[in-house]
Image (cartoon, rainbow, N blue to C red; front, side, top):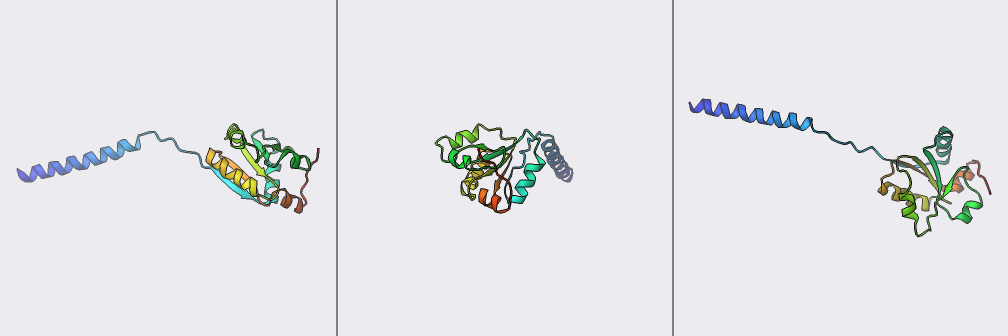
Length: 145
């Protein structure tokens, strides 16, 4: 009789473990989308712009001052001034599901902006390595106002 009791306890324990494992597999888990936060070379950034020419969900952000922007910028870029007191809030208001290319003069401010964007939960953002100086050194076009 004692042996049957032990076997019964063992079988019930195994069944309990199987039930817990199976029940755990039935729970709904929300998967967090993978962030893509990367530095990109000028040529790769140019290719990214070309691939997204007609994509309304692609945004180029120049984090320089409006004065620097006026001196020459990448076509279709918008200014979100890194030196502004509201910079973080301005970024936070943007749609975090869009694709962003960020740049400045040589990559310092835009690199810091990229880190902020990552912390704010942006899904896909790229920093132009070397900034607009590397862009121009690669012979890529800028526009002036």
